[in-house]
Amino acid sequence: IRDSLPTESGRKHGMNMWLALDIEQKRTRASGGMHAHSARESELEALQEAHRAYLRFEADSNELAIDLYNKVTATHSIDVRARAYAGQGCAHAQRSRLFGEPVQRCRAQALSMAKAALLADPKLPEAHLAMALALGMVDEAAALEEACTELKTAVHQSPEAAWCWAEMAALHERLGDIDNAKAAVQRALELDPDWLFALQTAASLALRRGEVARGLELLSRAAANTPTHANLLINQALVLKSKGEKRQAQAVKAEALALATRETHRNYLIQLWEAGSFPARLRGTGQADP
Image (cartoon, rainbow, N blue to C red; front, side, top):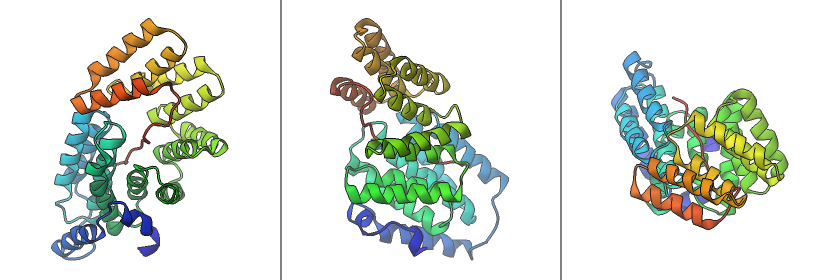
C-alpha cells in the first residue's frame, strides 16, 4: 500500500492521513474481514446513481453525487466502498476545479477520500485518479509531479480508461509538455471519441496551433454531449470573443451563466470570462468510473 500512496508533499497540502486511515480501518473492522461480501446488486445500482449525478457536471448534481457516494460507503463490501470513496474524492475535487469553491474548503476532503479509496483498494484506477485530481488543485511543482505519477499508475492499471488519459493530457498541457499532451489526448479520443474533457483538451491544443475552426468544432461536440456542463459553453464564448464575434460570444456566455445552478459557479464563470481567452490553463477535470 505504501508504494501506491502519495509522498510527503500531498500530506503537507491538506491531506489528513490519520482521518483516511481511521475511516477505512473502522469500516474494515465493521465488515468483519477484508472480504465480508461481494458487491450486491443494490450497491452497484447506488454507485451508478451517484455516477450519473457526477456526470452532469453541475454544481448541484456534484453535491448530490457526494451525498450519494457517502451513503454507499456504509457497506461491508471493500470493493464497493473503495469505489464510493474514489467517487467522493473526485466530486470533492471538482467542487473547486469546476465550480469555483475555494480550494481550502475542498482539498482536504478530496485528499482524504482519495486516500481512503487507496487504502481500501491500492490497485483501483479510480482511486489514483481521485488522488491526481485532488493533488492537482494547487499549482505546486511537487504536487503536480505526484499527480502525474498517480495518473501513470491509473492508466497502467486500466489502459482502456479514456478519462484517465484525458486527465493526463490536460495535466501535460498545463505543465507545457505539449507533445505528451497530444499523445495522451489522442489515446483518450481513440478510447472514447465523445468524452468531454478529452474533446476540451483537444480543442485547446488545436487553438494553440491556430486552428480556430477545429477548436470550436471540438468544443461544440463536447457541449452537445454534456449539455448540462456550463464550463464548455464559457470556453466557446471565450474563443468567439477572441475572434471578435462579440455578439455571438455574449449570447453563448449568457447560455453558460443560465446553466450554472449555484451563485458560486456563476461567479467563477464570470471570472473565467473576464480573465481572457481560451485556451488558458483552467482547473483540471476528470471522472471516476463506478
